[in-house]
Image (tube, rainbow, N blue to C red):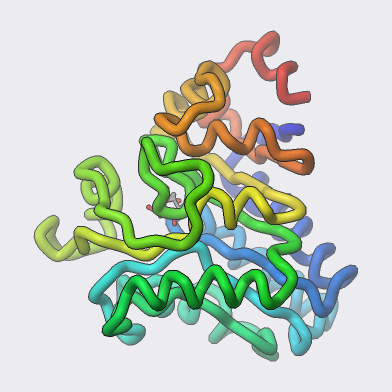
Length: 249
Ligand SMILES: O=P(O)(O)OC[C@H]1O[C@](O)(CO)[C@@H](O)[C@@H]1O
């Protein structure tokens, strides 16, 4: 299924309502969260809704998709810091259990195994929120990542480092590695919501629709998920014909 909104703001508002409904209906649920520019207005709206409805997060568990290797939790560009800044620190109460991979673990391979095991020990993800990179990555699963991958260390592509360079003072500071949930971890979520906004993602959206389900376009796997929703704004959806959109109806 897909939904198209006129603006990023409206797409974000709709997504925040979905998340608020999820938390109200499944207060002890397991929610997969994402970072990036796309999610900033989603979280801003979600904070408002949570306050407005007095929603309790005290039984909720969250798992983030990914974290940079080598950035401490206090680093302003770590995803741990992002989540505190854009969501958790602004909430009246925090989720019972907040989980992100530890990008500073001494044994990164063990940390990856621990992370997938932790997701599974919570019964898997009930809902996974996703953004997409301009090269089609989900989490930090770059093109050609195996669809059966679990949490792993990834070498970030030049494209991803260039895209994310806007958050750092200079390109050399952008980490070269990250820990990410694998495609299999993501696909095992019971429900997936992918949010794509902005004209700079229009070619990514077109590739998503035109691509076969194959590892060179990581997000393409989502087309095989039984409970997948694609939320776009007009700018991101502008290159896709109405005929093509129907394939996801
Ligand atoms: O929303 P943005 O900043 O375009 O990022 C898209 C995706 O890329 C990542 O930032 C990783 O590069 C994800 O965390 C995010 O979902």
